[in-house]
Image (cartoon, rainbow, N blue to C red):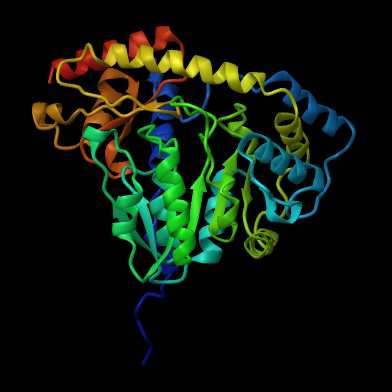
Amino acid sequence: MTNSAAPKTFADRIGRIEVSATMAVAAEAAKLRAQGASLVDFGAGEPHFPTPRHIKDAAIAAIEANFTRYTVVPGIPDVRKAIIDRHAADFGSDYSIDEAIFTAGGKLALFNTLQILIEHGDEVILPVPYWVSFKDIIQYAGGKVVFLETEESESFRITADAIEKAITPKTKAIILNSPSNPAGSVVSAEDLERIVTLAHQRGIYLLLDECYVYLNYEGKPVSGGSFTFAKDHIIVLGSLSKTYSMTGWRAGYALGPKAVVANLSKLQSQSTSNATSFVQKGAIAALAGSQQCVEEFRAEFITLRDYMLAKLAEIPDVTCTKPGGAFYVYPNIGAYIGRGGIKSATELATRLLHEGHVVTVPGEAFGTASHVRLSYPVTKENIDEGVRRMKDFLLKL
């Protein structure tokens, strides 16, 4: 007799994750554009500025000089030195070249870090709302996500007291994203130091997603990497994407203990190998060159944030916390769920896209059920038109 059961095709781990919600929204929007729809896009999580000229010139010069071959896996020494020098100058950290690795985007730094740290059953504390990929990458590694709820009435603020209460004997890591995607919440300097100390004392790894660290609108940017006493348990996950408007370049990095970085390099050697050679040269120009563009971007984002909040305030029954950083607003549209047959934020965002031609990302992707995320690095004219369409759609429900 033969076994007629169909063979298993895919590994269990791929079933533990879903397609990125933001990528799914972008794909659906692209389909509508191809059909001729004129969309206002608040979905994309990227600056609207072109990459600064000096960064582009450095990469172009590298290509012209035939700097297009393989490099060492963790990145050429010059790019790693630029990373640690920039971080030390801005935050007072103290990393060496062999405590830094350059990666094909900040997401890869996060993915690889969780892969080398997390065993099946390890718990990872994740504040809610969270960036869409955190949950899935933890689950892919076999970890258990411990969701840490925050209060919208307190602008989704993350506190050391709340973190401490969530810790169990199985806690292996804590993820902090400050300023955060999607709500723009910022961990205070005082709470950050307490969390760093708490993690260090208990032997828990603290993963600091600093993608938006320079887009802190509540004061001087703060990095957990500045607390050098806790270096053994801190891993800084950085990205040039938002800071320098380099999203398509895929330029990221990790800073951490030598053993962690060595294992990140080992894993990277068997996956992507080095990040693109000439992108590394562009990254050096970004990190070591003038930082005036960073300040200009930041000032423009603050202006656009305030403009977007003022426009959203004109929509009845929509409330929105004031983000302390990043470049998103996270309005509560819960008053409209239940109207017009809409049963969820996902359904509302889908209908808003198809009927109102406004691109948003539903809150379920970030762990909440009554919100949509709007990315505001667009023109004021686009904000005017997009919010007008959103208001018209909601009031007709």
